[in-house]
Image (cartoon, rainbow, N blue to C red; front, side, top):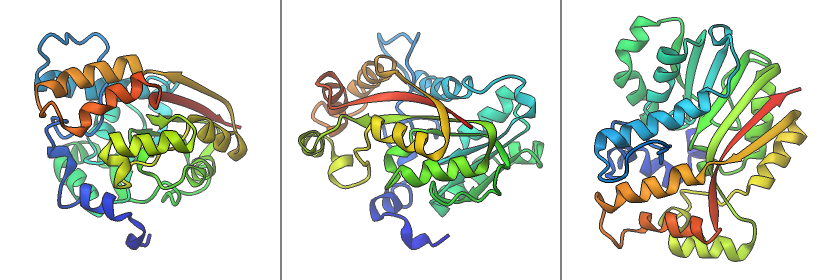
Amino acid sequence: MNQDHIPPTVRRTYGTEDLAKAASFAGGFINFGDWHGIDLTAPTPDDRVHSQEQLYRRVLNAFPEPRERLRLAEVGCGRGLGAALALREFRFASVTGVDIHPDQIERARTVNARAMATYPDRLGYTIGSADELPFHDASLDGVYSVEAAQHFRGLTGFARESARVLRPGGRLVVTTFFAAPGDEITERLKILLASFADGLDVPHTLDGFTTDLTEAGFTPVTTESIGPDVWPGLDRYLADTVPNDHWTRNFLPAWRHGLLDYHLITATRT
């Protein structure tokens, strides 16, 4: 894969800046978290890690039993902790983490070296992009992505590639945040949130993605809003970790004003 295709903001944010070290995250994970059931009185870094693990569990629970037979790939795996969790807790046949950024793959292999040694034929990490997955046709039972699709330049290629690498009956599970439709919404997001202003995040719409999935050969496609389990908890944690005027505090009002929402999408390859 041509590394020149990595967008500059993605290259910088996940390269020299190493986003996993930002105060908004904890434990090496990079997602906003599923805060359901977590006490928000005074959330701790351990609670933050738990929220991020819990978001992975929410995604991975969407795969059917018996999970021991399923070969999975995670697209946008970052430091690879979620892929290791998937293998350790859910006992999938194999899990391969894929990321476009070579620094992230290097980190994933280092951070998860013990797990890879324990499961040498079942856990791995490799370079690849959402629209150029490094797998043979119909070679996987499942593909999932946790808070990475907002960085993909387009979702049509991701839908097509997921359909290509999945066997008939295979499942795709994606969770991330989507923008409401409309040019005005996009401009408001750019004003509120630096990640949209600098191009790190792309204002994909949920309807646009579900259409891409249907046209790629997925049916049924189901969606679930999980914003109530994400945004309030995230903002409560941010209140104690970043300045009050930090731009990340604008995710909660953006959600409350209907500019974006967090969704879980599940689709089956026909």
